[in-house]
Length: 373
Ligand SMILES: [Zn+2]
Ligand SMILES: [Zn+2]
Image 1 (cartoon, helix red, strand yellow):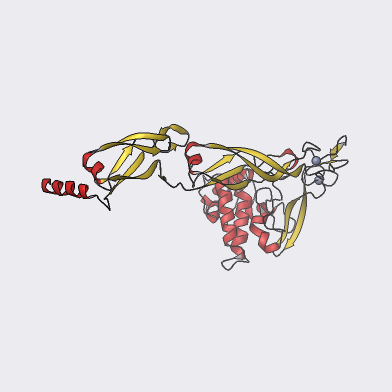
Image 2 (cartoon, protein in one colour):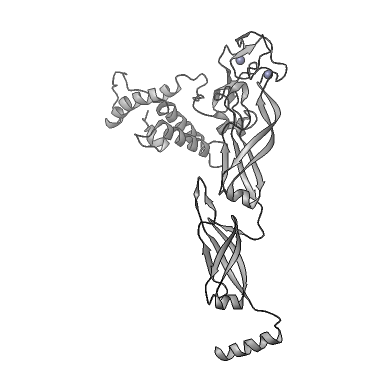
């Protein structure tokens, strides 16, 4: 029987990490799945065989030691203590009952086969999480322009899964004895064998009796029916950092849904919708605004009061200012996120207005001025 290079089959180098091997296998398994158009059953079996060996640290060590020696001898048939050569194909299958087994501890079968064999409800977490980790929550909060610039504190109300106050998350009725689950004997999962076109595939599913906890109270908490969490309306205080913008998101760790039986809670992700301001426009760290002055102020220069985000300040208009000129007020822009002392500038675009109506006296003065220009 020809010996195969399992590294080559999975397209990884001999020094690949277990993680890289697993990744390569998953990619190829998807690609060559026999139910797909591009599928190839023989190839699919081959890559699984390869993964059975080099996907296991222990078997990989043996393969590296003996498998390569076999190869370098070019079909060398007397073994390295195995006698008659070593049949890696059989080695790969040695634990299998129906001729084809998967390493279900390493692979999320639902991911690969979920749509084909109907392992139930899409991605199967069987063999992974014993109880559910709390889900993340994502919300969009609408805030005012200045709240985004200077930061703010907001109270929001969220309906979410919360740790059950009847049992403090244990899932057991008060005073109820907790014992090892009789169904799964504490493992939290049950091994199931599924007949498929490739033979039998063994997989682990979450125990239905204890919901994966491995233990079972004599009596489940009457409030949460054993899950350890209940739906609650919660008030959450959100600190909005100064300088936040619409494309940014903040994460509040642990403020998502509570997990089952005190397992880690999810996180809360908040992104923002910012109401526009009538006077100011944000452009990165700078604030843009417009200022109308008359042509006499533009010609002679002036000192005027102008509104900024921080209140009114005085601004010097230089002599001979043209319309469209941008004057800058340093440090009156948007604070940098996490460094609120560093701020951008306020950029003031000057618009010179020409008077539409002028008194007779005014016209006379302008006529005189005309002769001066
Ligand atoms: Zn409870
Ligand atoms: Zn159980």
